[in-house]
Amino acid sequence: MPRWLRLDPTSAVPPFEQVRHAVMAAANSGRAAVGTRLPPVRALATHLGVAANTVARAYRELDQAGVVETRGRAGTVIAAGSDDARQKVGAAAEEFAGTVRSVGLSEADAVAIIRAALRRA
Image (cartoon, rainbow, N blue to C red; front, top):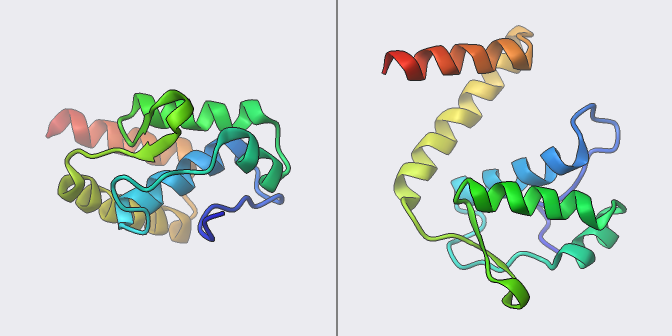
């Protein structure tokens, strides 16, 4: 199992979101290169101690976002695409998230700020 794919059992963030975030962060930072095969849903669920539906939901949302590509029995891999753009935006998002945490802003307020900025862009 990838070392970067862990859950924080004390977090208020739902497990499927933690999995989704970990995969997205790994793809954005290059820790998981394009074509990297992710663990099968059941194997990862067992490893993390969560239901298979939890991992399946995270993978499904990542697939819809274009971060991963699900190939049925062939597995789920980090998708090709605008890697450079994804890495730049991912790095900016990580920095923004750190700032949000350091000033104590809520997630809802941070998302509202991003949405407003995207509308103005």
